[in-house]
Image (tube, rainbow, N blue to C red):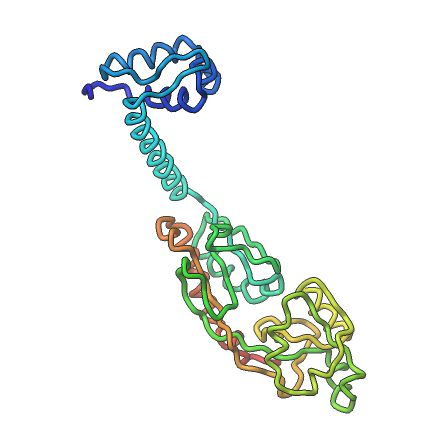
Length: 294
């Protein structure tokens, strides 16, 4: 290949092959069709090989053209990957996905610490019951309650997630003398794994009377005296208007993790933000493991 080879002509080769004609390739490249003709002709002259057969229906690539096409596609792919990595390194924001909207009460102090540790970095925080997939690159940092983190994820285990049953002070006091069938349970989609941890047959007999879409609504309803709710202690203990039901705490079978995708090792902002968040959350293990009840 000539030492002064014009690599930009490979982009023209790709465009002609994909478009099927010089005229259509010119439209896609935003140049005059004569420029495309000249580039292909010059490329063929430099290499001493016919790259396309000119047919009535357009251009058909030759065997020699196929070889050069493979090189052009590799260069395109590698150049795109390098550009993406360089762009990510310059990024001044990270996306953080919480394990539910109510967990913001636990994450907020850790986020405050991370903001101080990473000045100039923007945190895009999402908390919903639809967890963003870290394996599919839907988020940069995932804070998750799980037994088994995804195989594609790296991270730090913060601690066990203890759970308990909560209600307003009035409702909890009334429950001590009431039949379970006369009480109300507040449930939401996905809460069954929490309730199953209570082996006390009393709670299994409390009927579902209030059904809500997420953690925050369930907690608000419980604080208003609408019934009982099972919740992570890190969320329920600091929630205004709620107290634990006596002897309802259960040690966690799941852990809180701060996770990043293994590919994120190449993104300094994600790595530094994850370290700051996990370090700050680690300082809240007492709350997480149910040792800070009011």
